[in-house]
Length: 113
Image 1 (cartoon, rainbow, N blue to C red):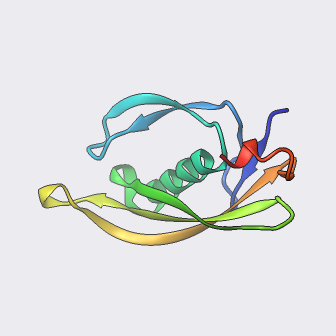
Image 2: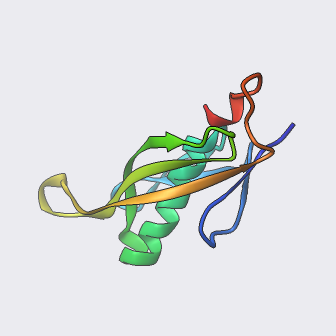
């Protein structure tokens, strides 16, 4: 069964969706497939970074903060920003609620990672 991930007004993402991953300089680096909610959170954070910082914006890292007990969503913390001198990233932490349909169950936690 294929899971669908949604987050705060962004276009939904289906499990197995492929997209191009960009490096800190904005250059295409590889193709990436959405396998679980963490991958979807990373893509949503990249979309948010582009929205807030322009085409140079990117997501530096993502981590799960907490998940609902009913398996319907998880909150992720991401650091988004732009590359600055010396290879560092200037930006901010954001929190994203990623919803999954169908909900994960104790016997089917694969969509969460």
